[in-house]
Image 1 (cartoon, one colour):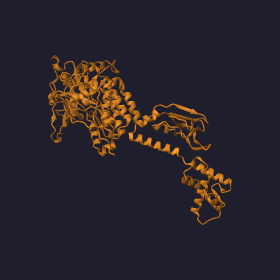
Image 2 (cartoon, one colour):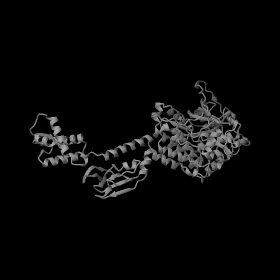
Image 3 (spheres, rainbow, N blue to C red):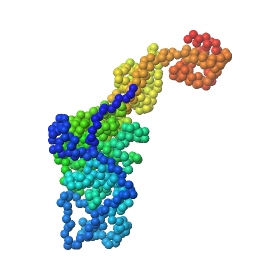
Length: 628
């Protein structure tokens, strides 16, 4: 049977791109419960654009701002641009060393220092950065690949798109992004190198050039069933990528910084396990940081807050937004907003679709505000998404903030359990020798994992005790009652042979761990359990009754096959005979031994030595077993 197709989605604009929309522009939405107005196409949404590379052979230089002449002692301070007064100091890139601001000239650059700087670092070149390639454009800026000539290091440079260069909000957001990202020194957050200004491109900041691929591009290749990506990025690998994004987000939250735009497009994945959470362009401070008593951090935070331009603005990516982001009220944003976005990212990772879709931005924002979310297993049933992953997604994306995970660490803990297959903490019971762990015929929903000791599994048949197995450390007993959907009676009794310690496994724990597997695996296990239960109910009488005659009959057949013309005494290797009869008639070797011991007592067979048995009278054995 063909797998069901994913839910259809209408073609729409690129509403996965990050936007900043004023509430005035969306005033006609009301509560966003009416159909979209006819002029919806005029809503400004900037798509992400992949610009074509510039050939290296034609790569132009980015000239630096001319270095200012050292001022005379009596000269007044140089004027500062009124747009950024008291908010940010933007120096030209790598100027000659100036006097320290804190030492009254005691650290002034010497003439020799200046000489070494020009000879060993700048070497007469006029520009610090050389443009090598334009990588991508989107939102309010472009990313360039540049060579830092001073350090001979290739970096990524972010610059503002020309149409936003005279926009106060964009400039403030750009500087805030550079400062916030520079604050977040974490292995899963891109490092910022420098914030500066050039005549060619204006404001810029440079950062590590990530040799990596965007997660959304990886997901596209998996969806296309590209074998290289399907093999490399299995469920386990995807969950580990997500787990590292959780680490980056949790670290940012420790600094009271909320990302507000977590999505696969802003996650870069390297070939050697590197994972980077990118694009902190609309991040903001919320609450009190853990290091709030640090005066430098306090000043830094106040500086960033002064740059904020978010009042009455809807910021984020519409197809991923949390309900509080759609409200446009910044006071509603907190750590649980990012938790929602982490859930939305996990949703995309396993369904290959953003959580919300629609014909226009109004319809999408309406769904985000009201929580009209299709569960991931319904959105793409063909993916066979494990139930535990669906549970984590739906909890993280709960419409009400109080119903979500309250911290990223809580979310990460569930993901860790999913990755490791960890079971919940179990109760432990100790049984003395002779204690019964379970009795045949009783109902039960518990199983036991033997931690130490030994137990005996047996049944009562025809008034006799028939031992089926002896189990020890690492074995599980009673598992069928946990997996089967129906209440089962115990098919056998279990008795402790010696002091035994066992962990108690409940039906809930087994069910939760099965849900970590694809749904078809849970069904396979349940089917196998039902078949084993049926086999137990129809157990062969040779197992439960006296099987002496059938053992002797099998012994006679083995003799006839081995020596068809011999009628005198025959010696056979004892252990080989026991193993062959056990295999042929499907009973335990112990039951074969018991039958042979009984035959020894009646003189039908003799013990030749410790390793050999003898059949003294083949005709007598043949006569006794022929009609049985």
